[in-house]
Length: 97
Image (cartoon, rainbow, N blue to C red; front, side):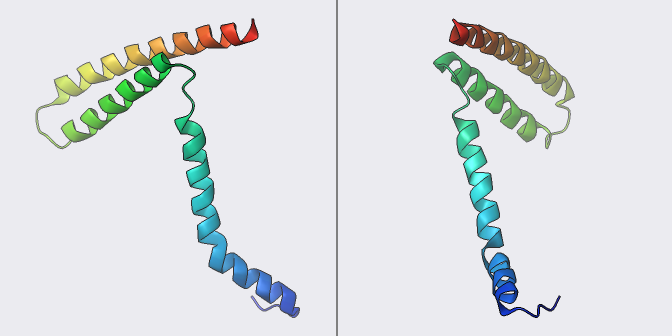
């Protein structure tokens, strides 16, 4: 794409130079916001436990004959997810009081 106006050419060049940096900045900002999602220590512990289970499932996916264990971990993950949802409801209700 050719621009007649030099200002547009400079603008286009700066987007190419800094576009990746801006993209990375947005991702990092999102991750920082998400890392503070926990409203209480209990929520933080539930989130940590769920992340640990996901990590274990990922490791087990590379090992033969671990389907039963992976299914058990999925069931535990679902229970933790329910506990986390319940905790978020409790905290949300207390924030409105």
